[in-house]
Amino acid sequence: MTITRVFRVASAALLLAFALIHPALAQAPAAAAAATLDSGNTAWMLTATALVLFMTLPGLALFYGGLVQSKNVLSVLMHCFAITCVVSILWVVFAYSLAFSGEGGWIGNLDKAFLAGLDKVKTPGNFPETLFVTYQMTFAIITPALIIGAFPERVTFRFVLLFAALWLVLVYVPVAHWVWGGGWLAEKNTIDFAGGIVVHTTAGISALVAAMVIGPRQGFPTHVLPPHNPGMTMAGGAMLWIGWFGFNGGSALAADGAAASAMLATHLAAAAGAITWSVVEWAKFGKPSSVGTVTGMVAGLATITPAAGHTGPMAAIVIGLVAGVVCFAAVRYVKTTLKTDDSLDVFGVHGVGGMLGSLAVAITAAPSLGGAGLAEGMTTASQLGAQALAIVVTLVWSAVATWVILKVIDALCGCREVHDAEREGLDLTAHGERAYDLR
Image (cartoon, rainbow, N blue to C red; front, side, top):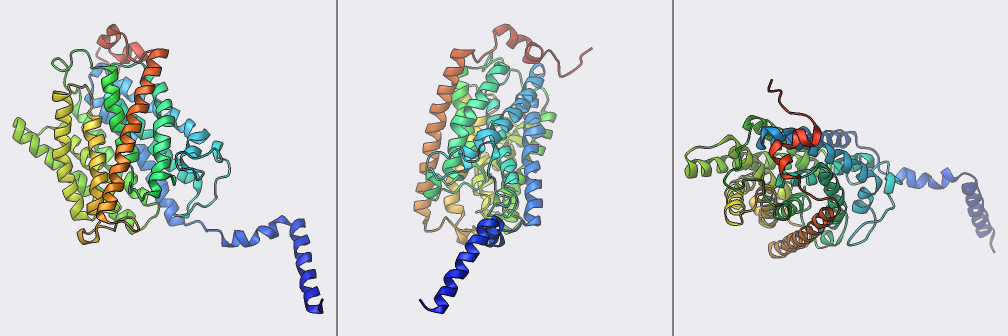
């Protein structure tokens, strides 16, 4: 053995021994190569996270609260508030880990249960993983909160708590993993920029199934009273519009051009949806209503959601215009043809809008139309096939799982309030309070 080789072996042995004595030295190369925190991205994601939570509390709560009768306002607000609390705890205990850790095609693992082993800096985006956990938590909160619009004024409070917990685990978490957590739909290059499939399709079809299983409100469809406070609904809708900038813009996971493009597309689709719905109402009923206008705005937002980061501004306007017409027709179909009391139009607006936008992105993402391009290696036809597959699978899974959840809860403790409680109002019978002091 030459002197040079002996020196190399001895040097390597000394370095190894020193590394064993000082483990930090062995980690130094990895630490040096680790991503550094991007303060700009972090600041934007902090803002986007607050905006998405603002969509549920108070946005969605007020939006739904204005649409029910005055004797049920507090119950709707309590539903949104309680779902926020329940989902938040379950999310950090195990749901986040199942959705966003591991390499399984169908479900994640529990490596990050109780938020163990989080990265100090998560890539892409270069912001703390704790922030990513919180951002995704706000999505997990608003999705089951959307569903309560299918059965207000007639279900028990304990049902809402149980349903939110079981639905999060059995529906939302698996679908989120399939699409966003590296699961099998992600491997098929499914595009869902901010939740057209994960949020709106799951919530929409689950709402329709729930409305069918639970049954209609007393007096539906001939004697259901109109919304008690359209002004409250308009205020809540305005909050949803603002909060949606965090919903879609934040899904870029960076303060960059994609976030800016998503925000512009979001705003234009909302405006176009509101205008279209108003025009249709004006033509059909002689007057454009405030509730209809704000519902059209939400339809435009739901429809642009899966495509926001991939669609140019002109195509976003077209998506909003189409959403206003299609979702209006879907709402009418559910109530008049199916005779189903999806009370606050969750399926017609969110479900149909989410599916429509998820299909449209295969066309509007084309650079020739101002889009940012399809998934790598995809053509318009193959992308459309991937989107359709994701929609069908998500629709079937959500419908079946929701039906099972409803049947289990009904067997355990029942879903509906007794008739007397429905007549008196859930504010007083379930919570012992009234929203308005009528003295």
